[in-house]
Length: 222
Image 1 (cartoon, rainbow, N blue to C red):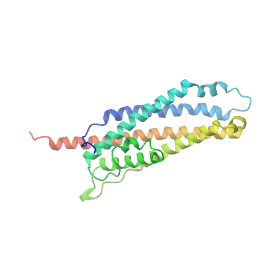
Image 2: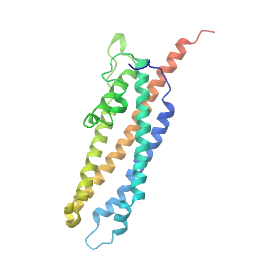
Image 3: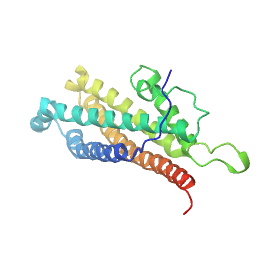
Image 4: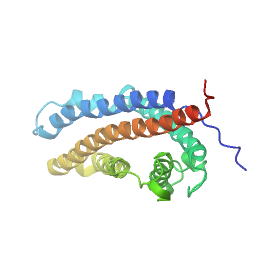
């Protein structure tokens, strides 16, 4: 049985998430000019240095470390706002709080659970409807973030597999198709990072506004 929910400010985790998401987005955008150079390369062009750089352990490890740090901090933030949502609005969530973490790592489930959980948190954290009306549904911002992220990751997977295939190594058209998928994925991942920043900032602000109203209501009159 889960312990009773206690409200804790998500601001610190939100700040760290925004910073790391910004770095991820910047890294994705920075890779696009390099990939465009790879895309436009003609047979006989010397692109060995670019290919070698992308294949180095240092480049891969740096990217993995940044992605891992961002994922950990973002999931911690999501878990925090998910618990806070129980304090703000105790009813109406479809999934237990543990899925705010587990929903990211369980295969197939991770294609929609994080999105649904964020929807639930958004709905709970928003102001109640007038005259007992249902709380407003999440804004399109949450849907846009998740769709962009999933599509970007899917294109990255397809592009990487195509680049590693034998066809991309020997056929110019196959090679350029693989690079174009990777370029599109980096642009989508950068866009998803921006949308995630907006989601984090807005959800955090809604919860902090609720906490401020609750404190004001409990403050004894002078």
